[in-house]
Image 1 (cartoon, helix red, strand yellow):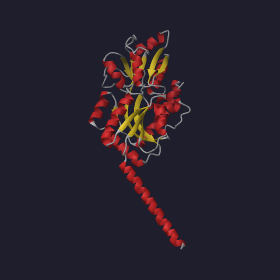
Image 2: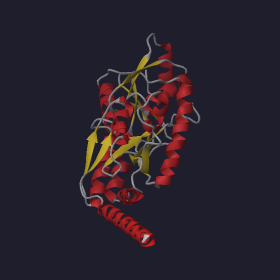
Image 3: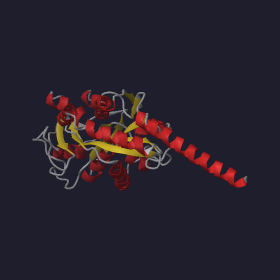
Image 4: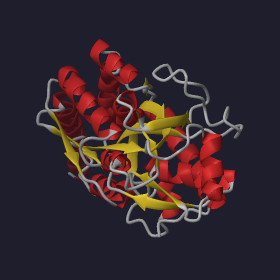
Length: 327
């Protein structure tokens, strides 16, 4: 009797496991069966917001499901990241992270989430660089002239950024320290507001993303002195790199990538990754990124995880060298 009962329990257990696997597989194969939220840690109008909306539209075509962009600006992207870290790991809440996700691990000593452990990397989607820009009324037209002007001035120059912990913040902190001039950081809630501050003459300098800088540069409403890329960019071929301008090796990149909450099922991660790779191959996406001096990437989840860890280490050293802080 006991043997028969044990056999019954074993058979029932195997059946339950099989049913569970089949139901899980069915759920994953049906994903996504409702709209996906793509959380962005900046307000509308900046480079990251543009990339989020471009990607959301392309993913709608690949996944046959609506992708809704939701802006959660503030705290250098930490508000958005914390919301996604606490979300259900079901693939319906995603984060468009950027370089600040790696930077904030060093700038903020008490984050409510772990930038690595609390997320499942899906793919690095893009990479671009910053343009060093000034208000037109500033009497400089090269980086060397800017440095001289800053050193000779009676008051420190001011620079805008998209927020504490953003690449533009740390990039300018590094450049001013390396060049030996003082500059006052004025953080805004995104690239769009920081560009508006520069246009209005409220600040002297800003490191702007291509999508924020190019329209105003072409209209001669701002002046572009240099680009933080390792080589000149096609959209402004006459603008030298910072390295060319007297600071060899100075490169500050800005990347964007998709993260899901930790413990998101591998099947969902793989499906999202495949959709992102195909989305980045769409002609309209390639063209829009090219216009904004932004390169598509489409890395694997494993490669993006390794890159994110390496970026966290790299920026930790940069934060120390620049003496930057979130205060």
